[in-house]
Image 1 (tube, rainbow, N blue to C red):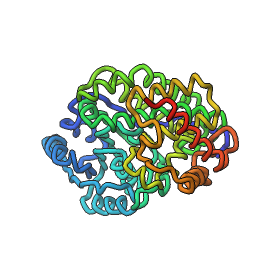
Image 2: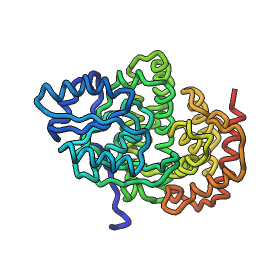
Image 3: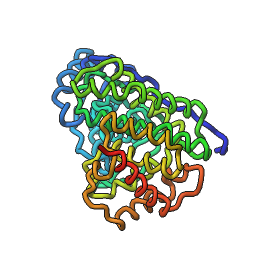
Image 4: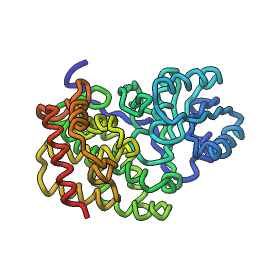
Amino acid sequence: MSKSVKSVTSPKKFITGKRLLENLNDYIEDFGDHAYIICDEFILERAQKEAGNSIQKAGNQSVFEKFNYECTQEEIDRNRELARNAGANIIVGIGGGKTLDTAKATAYYEKLPVVIFPTIASTDAPCTALAVIYKHDGSFDRYLFLPTNPDVVLADSDILASAPPRFFAAGIGDALATYFEARACFKANGDNLVLMKPSTTGLGLARLCYDTLLENGVKAMQAIKHGVSTRAVEDTIEATIYLSGVGAESGGLAAAHAIHNGMTAVPSLHRAQHGDKVTFGLLAQLVLENAPAEELETVIDFIKGVGLPLTLKDLGVDEFIEEEWRQVAQSACAEGDTMGNMPFPVTSDDVYNAIVAANAIAESYHD
């Protein structure tokens, strides 16, 4: 492949609105009439009733399977076998990011179309041609790069608004890093998430994601805390799920996600959301870049405004163990990870120093 090949990739359809679950058949029947639906436990009964009725009324078939909590290769293989035995011709994922990644991976290996239905706006995973595979202990294993994006992504604003606020905030945190990582990757002419070069469109969508968050994020969180959906919530959902997903995929990742991947091996952080860790990874990236003070302050004020964890202590780290964090820094610089998309060489010492400095800066802004 030419080193100059650029890309813009996205789902075939991205649909937002209300009452999408109870009308699920309308959005999947063009792709298949026998759905294998991987579903989070908390919404399984509701999905069986609402989505199941929608599919049955249309004369189509569905099989529902509870997701087993972690997107491991074993869980993917388990669902592949069940889908094959059921005779399914379309895969649907209903749930959080790991459930959706499992659905995408299952569909990829079985060569079937996939429809994605996020129940929390905690990451941009729904739209990407990527699945993040983890080990049984919750630590990062590898990226699975997929040849295509999901066929349909359905974002039900009422369901997403009713999820716990900390999940919505985590999605904002994940999306917050999109522009800064795409900017770094663009400068470096690094590889985006489909292993091509970042495009001007990708960078532009990433910037739109950032601008949309700054305008709507704090207002949206106030609505979410009361379990209601507003225009600000809908615009933020579009930013966290679509603009972030397409912006990251076409624009590329850099230090923030690489540092997140290193942080997955820290036991005290296992309760922290993906987006929470990416947010801290972004602060460390800005330190690595020696970003202007005004830009850093804008980001920190926004983090505080939406109620995201700011310091390592906020993330759950009671004791900073140097050896542990040097391992985080080393893992973040692993060959093939996205640290290589920074526009200058970065060593594990650089990353460790940036982590310590970012935490100190965050502490100085703490109330």
